[in-house]
Length: 366
Ligand code: GTQ
Image (cartoon, rainbow, N blue to C red; front, side, top):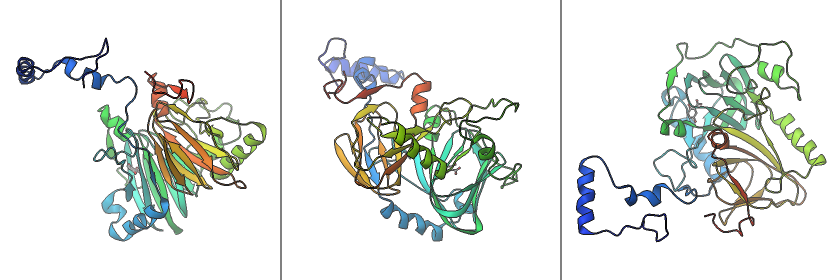
């Protein structure tokens, strides 16, 4: 990829250079100028494509897995989403992984831990639970839970519950790129809960309240493991009565670590946003890949110039640095989008950048 710009590589191929490149290759080396323009792009060049997965299409396929494999054999019975621009990489967008995990009443997935961080957004079902480092939590539709890096976790659905589907999000592909992943199986297969049910919500889930005199929380992730749908939606509605929110996202709130005010985990974060009836946002772009799950209502997103219409529980992705805007289809009902992203990774590494459409004449940044 030659570029005739001063400061960029533009060496023409010649037979002599071709012989030289072959010689370098035999010494496990190469001439930087043959790849420099590709490995130092002017701006992010995601191969991920904006993509939407309709829940109406995915649901029957996910339920089919119930009869085809057991969680004992599969480890996790999950149908994962693959970005059409990144076939074979297990990624839904960028280095983010997502999948729909399904379990029927009485089933469980045994305990393990990994260096990668996971989060879950509950789509449908009843009686589901997850146990994170001995803290057992009940799960209902719209709840958001974290299973931080290194934490033991196992999941299940109580015998009296219903078939449950939740969306998993993990940073394992990024962690693998960094050659930093570890995996362990719990000796007991299933953890014995060591605390009262939903104790992290009882202790850390109060509105703007933290316990006094308790051991200071020193772990690098949120001490609150579950964010329930009811109070989350209520907080969005209340905020919307007092503020216009963001021009790009409507009323948007980050799920935070109450001990720091920062993202729930170091690598992955999650947000919930509400679009007023008739709302249509302005367009912006930022580094970091985002995965959305429609929590309520219907509408559309315009991502890199393509329109994607969505309804409840559809999943869609916005690649890093892609322009995107959101619209609510209804003039009467609000719409709510859950999302998770690797934006905290970008911020931690000093790579976060954001741009409003129009600030640069709407042209690609150079
Ligand atoms: O529940 O621990 O979708 O380890 C992929 C990998 C879920 C989990 C996934 C996992 C899990």
